[in-house]
Length: 262
Image (tube, rainbow, N blue to C red):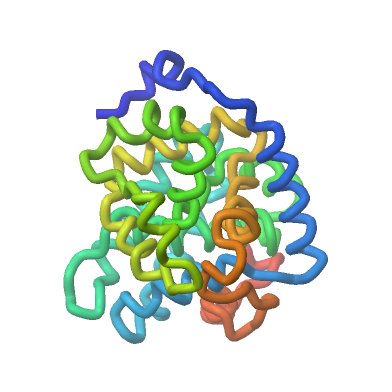
């Protein structure tokens, strides 16, 4: 079981991540200029697995949990809050077949919602956003898993692999044989292997890589498309932000403006 008390012992970073951080900054700026919403693409695939008409349920959860953000003052408080949010999501929203969704699946819409709420749309105001963004989690996706496995393999084996017997490992040779084919289903399956323990290990690793704002590493999803998934290996390209996108619908359902945010 992962423990915060042994974090300093566990996280002995082997790699120099400065190049990755620069690439993420560059990609993030590019996405802002082009008004690209990668979160919407990530969630579009997941939403097909969730029960139909789940938006009103997520609306209610988003409203309830967004009201608590101002009261969070430490990373530990945010992490506990985040776990409660994930648990509530899993209790309320099921898969199309009526089963409980995995921890790895539930964290995706929650992390993208919170980043949009705090950092992008800035519903809490500048000072609150600046305070809270350091606590935000990185959204884990199959693309992220494969990227970190490929480029930071020793650190991955040290920090992530011990926390799951089936921690979403990709066979690189097999993936290479899927040139120009759709990998989205394989990458969605990786989320089924992410338990709370495995998820926490990922987030602690991300904080070691870039403690000032770990959620910058969300840009790895786009960076990977230009490296590992180049030449058509990935399924399609991100589209500009749209009021009809997944998160656009959520905020429309919340019907919140900056003056109304708690």
